[in-house]
Image (cartoon, rainbow, N blue to C red):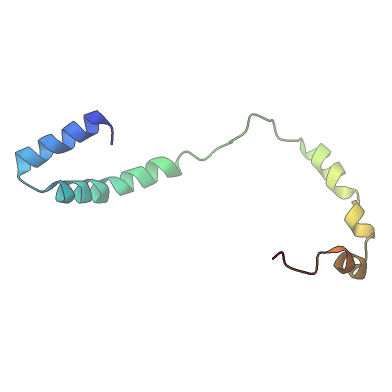
Length: 85
């Protein structure tokens, strides 16, 4: 815990006469809804790369890939059949 927070907790313990545990439990219970709300609103892009335009990704995914030429039997035969020891 950072020093300024530790000092604030110690001051609150002294002012209220409660135990450190009681102060921390109450702070967590009161603060969790605020923390949840603050973290929930931070949804957004997590990359600096611009998304592909619709026309581009549709063209890419419309093309068959290598796996579409493989039969299920060939795929099963190429997979590792034993677990590592």
